[in-house]
Image (cartoon, rainbow, N blue to C red; front, side):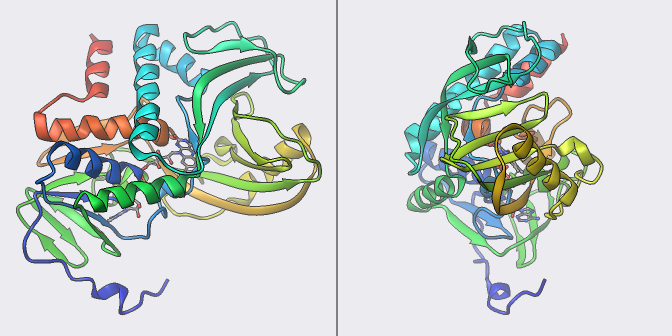
Length: 358
Ligand SMILES: Cc1cc2nc3c(=O)[nH]c(=O)nc-3n(C[C@H](O)[C@H](O)[C@H](O)COP(=O)(O)OP(=O)(O)OC[C@H]3O[C@@H](n4cnc5c(N)ncnc54)[C@H](O)[C@@H]3O)c2cc1C
């Protein structure tokens, strides 16, 4: 890809900020928000080498969600029921904070449905068994208090707020490395600053090995019928999730494991095999497709236990590993990281891991 002279002519001022956040997606901008809310006098820069929403934050399904029943089943097996419930309550608070503080447009207040063909006995506080909206699924569990969002609208309102609060956002600047209090970028080195890496699936480019990049495929389809189902829908047995935008129009994602190796990448390519599987799922289970309106990919960052990593590493802070749940868990995680920086608080997820390993 070629780059214009104009884009390459961004110049960073000589004077360094107190804090430099690398990555201007939902998480990086949210960290800036909480830092400035707590300490309005801080000088905060956010650097990103792409435009707003080019990372996962502008490419996701727009589920502002606590996650599926299967996510909590997995957490319960791994960490125990009490810890899983703590994560659920953390996500619940995160969603409420996102809506309360950012007040984005295009939000639908809704519920999520976790659908299963096979009998499901697992019970979890916060999920209630109800009749399924689709007859081929015998078991359906709902969780209230979920939101369907337009992810770009959310990012736009967040960016607007953060700029109003005094953050300076530089787009078109790539960070090449970080050491002590230096951040090396394509536009020079920033000195004497506290670095915060918020790169999620792109973390490898600056801090290799901390999270695994995983690509996710999505498509938006127009159906041949005017089928409409409300809410955010998870179908864990087929590893898909979808939502309707209006009667006869839906977005669907998932099926990553169909080509797992190819999807372990931070390159934004379309995977035809997975896209085909997503369309096949719609046609087999929902309705014939009239037209595919859009197909796209985004990059997630997975941690080994699928919970976020909020850490201080060497001289910098690190927030990543949202494992496909960054919109739901992100805003409260960003608040937690801001408190780690300003008040030396501990990471909620680090404490949880430490307790569970005892
Ligand atoms: C297909 C898909 C569907 C998803 N659906 C959902 C969902 O419905 N609900 C949910 O909760 N989560 C979902 N997720 C996950 C969610 O989108 C992410 O967890 C969240 O967006 C992570 O935000 P972030 O700011 O950490 O990362 P990103 O949004 O990826 O931001 C990272 C930023 O870093 C920038 N960057 C990268 N390298 C450099 C560098 N060297 N220098 C400077 N800048 C750099 C990138 O340009 C990017 O803007 C989905 C993800 C995908 C991919």
